[in-house]
Image 1 (cartoon, one colour):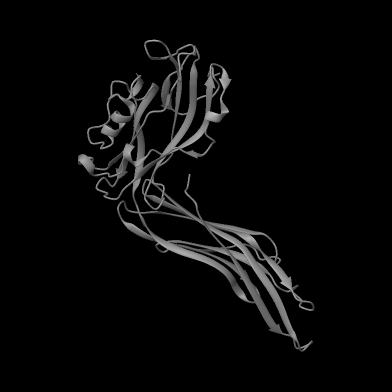
Image 2 (cartoon, helix red, strand yellow; image 1 turned 90 degrees about the vertical axis):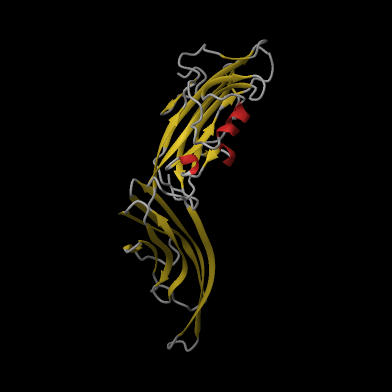
Length: 334
């Protein structure tokens, strides 16, 4: 679940060393192909960080230059406050592929800022470090718990500033199942995702991200792959449908996301249009630090356009629902 930031570089180094036996120079070219990755997440008050280094070096010695005695290794540096340090791979041949990961965690105090530093290095036994990539950031120990409101008897929360935009886009005020012939033009299921922040007085912004785990779209019983999204598709709402300020409207530590997946039959054609989709959602800080566990949920809809308007079609048991967990994505939910 971690957001991973990729840092990559390629470095060309020419090494020269004297040879007493030959009385001439020995030149070797190293071309580095290494990448460093770093990621952070927070659950409860525990901060988790990971740093990974992967790659290899292309080694081209000149004639008469013996590299048999040289070895390489890579290191990953990962420190939260004063917790952590360097982790190294075993040493091996100069052109071998290397991978090493350092995982650290510490229990912090909600609202307190902790410095996090990372580094990656490739090291030659003869010349020392010949590649590196580093950085640092301050991590705020803040976490979130995700919940959801999706009943047709409910409306967006009074302190959710995105409520009017939801109503404008859907043409309805309620959450849960709805049909709308004027604005939305279809069958939808509206829901409000809530991120409850600890500490509740945190004033920074928080984004609720939504990812498609799997989905299928059908006309009657025929799958329409052109209308489907690939697994991992980022379906995060536009900012106009989110309230990312945990103190707005007197929220006292809550952020919101509003969405309404739906099916939109194009004509009175006798066809039933079906959507089956699995999502997961999570809360993150502006720098990408994930601060909540994943919340998994599903939406399944079957819709048809008749003369009077759009209707939910209930020819499949358990259809036209939203809920926690996952759903089968077959047309008949079997």
